Length: 124
Image 1 (tube, rainbow, N blue to C red):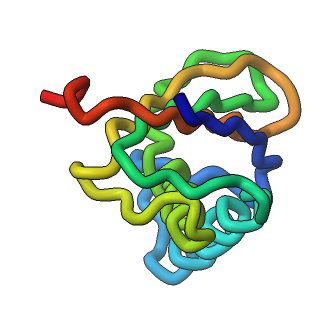
Image 2: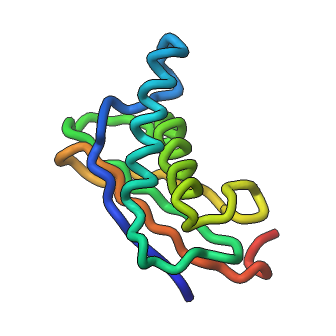
């Protein structure tokens, strides 16, 4: 079983699907998160070949309630950066299950991401 885990400190504001951000402002945020995803990958890590499951734990500064799934644009940008790094061949349905987004607690804004290889027989 092949798996990696890494933490990305928030490089900028979160990208939230409930916000109505101007497309140029959202593009700038997406670029930052995507670069952070690429930069987080260690060059010595072995690339994944088969399907993987991705889980992302989101840590926010405030302790109030929120829906982690509303931050899917942030996590999508990170996953795109991971693909850019070469760790994943693609993020389509043949290669990735998830990402599964979860509350990671209160603290410095960051995303803890875990990528685990799975057998193709584990997919529907």
